[in-house]
Image (cartoon, rainbow, N blue to C red; front, side, top):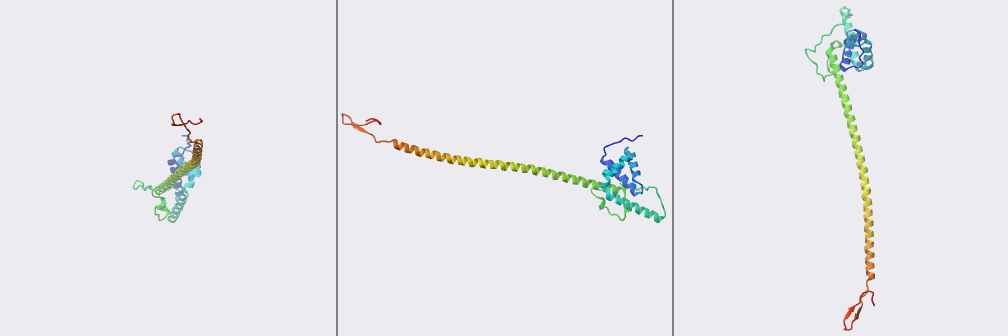
Length: 222
């Protein structure tokens, strides 16, 4: 059956590709064989698997690749000492059913006497540890960006309030100056009114009528 190209790689696909390549390296096989195996499982071409490995995944598992190569050397030395030369990949027994590793434990936390102690469960455990660290790093970065945005928003509010406060102070100073000028004008007007009233007052005039009584004359009459 012809293989269909699939553009989107899921996290499970990447994990399967990484585990398979590391297993082939550890067992003395080639990466091309690993790409063929993954391609059969995911219905992809080996070229697509190889491109995904070299472009996106390889740099994330540098330490695991070195560890797998050391294990491969240990295996070859052990076979040489025993006088056995086997090119057939050995199958590493999985102990996942016996004991599920903790998700928060990283590969470097597992004590090993030699590279031959490496198992598929430990590789998976190491990959999960890297994934958890990556997620924690992304969450910390997102939290830092959110805090920075909130800080910038608060700073804008503070700047706006400071401008409004300065405008209010300016308006208050202007009102105070206008009020003082108004008080001075009113005081001058009051003084001028008093002086004008005092200047218009004259002494009352009287005259005696025919009966000998004093009679006040109206203002302005002789």
